[in-house]
Length: 197
Image (tube, rainbow, N blue to C red; front, side):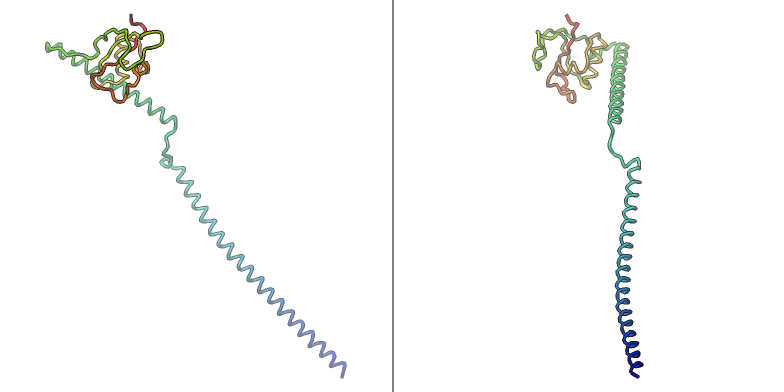
């Protein structure tokens, strides 16, 4: 009987030990399952964040590729604009010259006289009032009185039409302090002419 009791005791002890191990194993399994679930939840949250970021990047890329998204002018755009402005100014000056010619024709037909501001300039061997003498002596050229509607380029063009080879830059250099954007009507400026005698 002692042997049976011993075996029964061993069997109960082994069963209890096995149950204790099963309980500890079950706790570890439950703990690991909880950690796995936490990791899966964190991954799902990250996936949502990544999806939102991908959508924002896609939207920004789409906006960047739209033609009106780029509102900056390139150097070529500015150069083309400057050329167009010069062309418009040239057409305006041509129209002004045409109007003056038509007024002269009308005046001749009507017997009256129209004073044309592009009359032959007066030869002057002195420098303008607001300029310092050029190195090597006074400049040779002409005095010109600014009229309404005049621009530096229009004045230079009129002078070239009369045989005076001068550029807008040369007029500006010969008249320091002259603001080409606000010419004063009636003010005399100096038109340099290297060929003047």
